[in-house]
Length: 173
Image (cartoon, rainbow, N blue to C red; front, side):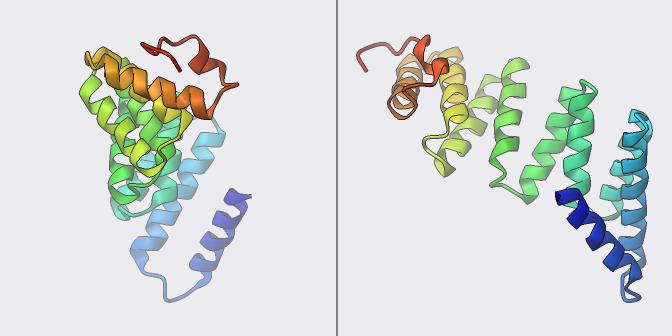
């Protein structure tokens, strides 16, 4: 449904004579990227979406699709860089903060991951994935008490979530 709305918006913009040439060029690059993505041409898709973003840096749809292309092709470090840029524009995009935190943990960048999970929990203190990510990053940083507290909060708010059951909490619930 979102793609249909986006395509309708693109069509409306392209039909408007008042649209600036750079917007048309960004939309053309985006459409080329979508075609390349459908045809499983990863390099062309990446180039096209990157070109759309270069033309129009606030083109969020192009940024999101570029992130997904990177993730689908296993290029997590590049996806993380794109997520970081996306979050500069949309700081409340919690799903990207969570994904970025997970990638940073995998890359052994524990302090940076901890910062991402902390930002998620500032916006949504009971976010299950945020609590788990925070606990993991805190534990790896040597902050066992903070990790245990995050697990306790998770167990309290998500008693049927098995992800919190097998995790030590350093004390009674």
